[in-house]
Image 1 (cartoon, rainbow, N blue to C red):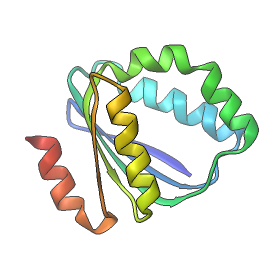
Image 2 (tube, rainbow, N blue to C red):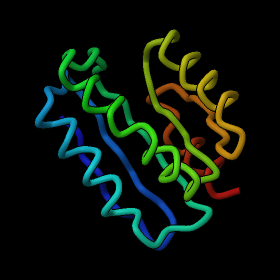
Image 3 (cartoon, helix red, strand yellow):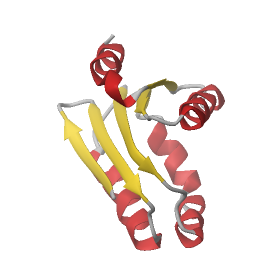
Image 4 (tube, rainbow, N blue to C red):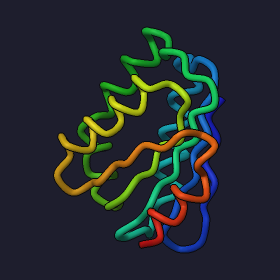
Length: 121
């Protein structure tokens, strides 16, 4: 499952759980792009409920759209990731180090209030 909710003028809340197949990945990427169309200096809150690697076909879909997704990511300057798994939090913050215009900070899932406060500062 992958849900995207637009919160105000500059924020997306994204909830991920389970394993995405190729159709779900295609829909998820389309939804991310459409719901962030006019966002500038945006913020994202990722809530990773239960993470499973996407299917191989879903990964191919994601890689095929990577060039356009880099342009999409420039709309955002902060992302908070809520996750229970330590490795997932570390990978998320490492990704933030690789993307110069996007600061990513990971939180435990029960730290939603702290994550939202960090996003708003």
